[in-house]
Image 1: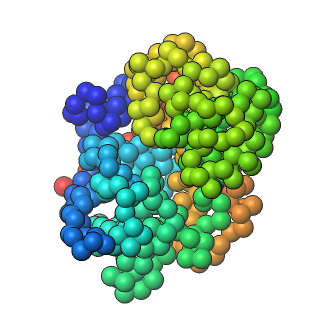
Image 2: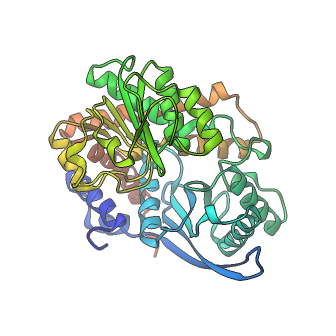
Length: 416
């Protein structure tokens, strides 16, 4: 059992509540709380100054009962095996909630990409790919972008894999450039899914998105897209923040001007269309909807009492600790959990994988319509489960996910 306070430990706490309601068989409980495979690799890279640095990388395949492992790769100084394992577990439940034929995986490399040149990042990516190559593939494990990785990193990853296997394999990763077999709509998919989850939640709670106020922590790809799409629905985005600071405007931020500012300065800080906002002040804003879209463990028992939003939609993975979740739920805050709220990204990654394997590509309208259908279907299934068992949405999402994985595990039987 993971130590109390670890990221994986938080996942286990979330799992336990749902597993008890399901009266999950003890053997299945053990199987579903242990990762299938944890890979640790050393990645030596010659830096631009001629020195050799050895980076540590991980790839965890948590569960592959429903299909190939699926999950992103992050480059960050704070990457740990515990974090990657928890993220791989969350991917398992996320894919199950969305009814995708994937298991859960995740990868990470301990590095600071902000201090590395493009050549060094390419060298690191290619070496990391080569080190885990025996464990990945379109039918084994399909990586994708995550924190500090992007379509270009996936292009290097795909090329390295293709060179090793001797033929071009577009389906080995998702989140690729469009020119290399990426899917239209993939870049916006996670943020679009967050918007859909917020819209469906508002409808359930009985308030209109038009005129609703929104605050977004983490104005990166997910947070920025979610903010823009919510604004397009008529919501008023009054506060956003990133690692460097934040900005607030009670009348609503001009999203186009903010996007232009961020494109030029790579931060929301000092945006002229609002007042400066300290990063830790954003959670205390009096808004209808709060979207944490940064890293895990951002909302804790220490700061949960400051949150005034009535709807919290988790754009990030694991942004709310179990203790904070209980405190917010007890206060009546409606929380859409990460494994449902941000499932848009992996859903369109699935669409990309399907398009690659068929060699036939869909229009962006088709992608968005299929995403809409998947997200609404998943939201309805979780909401109905929550109402049936009289539990919160997080527990309900785990009930749905665990039930689906456990059912197939029992059907497949025990290989010995």
